[in-house]
Amino acid sequence: MKTQNDTHPSYPDLCLTFVKGGSFSMGDKDGTTGILEHEVKVSSYYIGKYLVTQRLWHSLMGNNPSFSIGGKRPVETVSWSDAQDFIKKLNSCQSVQNFLQNLDPAGTEFRLPTEAEWEYAARGGNKSRGFVYSGNDKLKEVGWYDENSSGEIKPVGLKFPNELGLFDMSGNVWEWCQDWYGEDYYEQCAEKGLAIDPQGPDEGVDRVLRGGSSFRYPLYCRAAYRYDAHPEYRDGGLGFRLVVPCQLTGKQDGFH
Image (tube, rainbow, N blue to C red; front, side, top):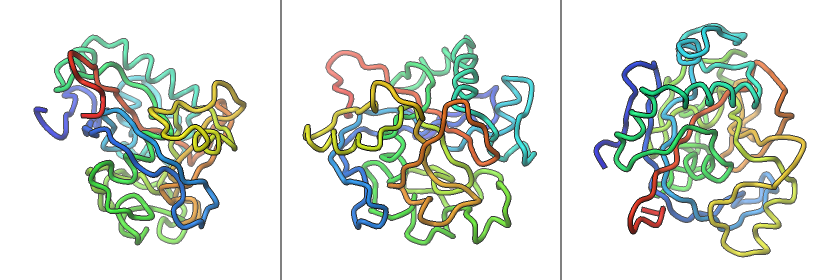
């Protein structure tokens, strides 16, 4: 692999970090949230070092839907469907396709993370030290939440990153995931044994949200905590982060 972090030269804050695939225990280890722990294996991928910022959104979409204005603040007041529109336009740019093809290993195209990819990255991937929050057991070190945010969304990258160098995965804004939300989906996965690249239920009403926000208690910011909302719902605490799966060639099995 060429570098650990790859940044597109034309789009601000579009910086990707490689996440080597592997296995992990997804869910709550100590029972605090009541979310079932089960074994999951994910393939390698790239994930955004930062949440999608307002200036990145504006550079592509030409507008800014956010309530708390600031170029380096996460874009918010965006629905799951709004995020899909942004991603579709991003993937249509030839310079973006060239950028992804020049990664090592090459990337396919941008999308939202699956719930499993999000949690694996939030926990630090294969460098995980087992923290409750993304990067630390002390939330104030790594995230913005109700007790330290003064009730506002903060610019990205001000707190300490997690083991993979990812910022703001606990707190600041909720992050949309690709999956439909299923309350009993974890139970279904556990019954089948090791879940490999789980994609969530085939259908549903709500989409998955992860990470908590500046307006929420620490419980919501735990790496294991799950939340959900209708894909057309917009709120000043909802944003997103990008993922790019690796393009597999030859004898690659997706976990290296």
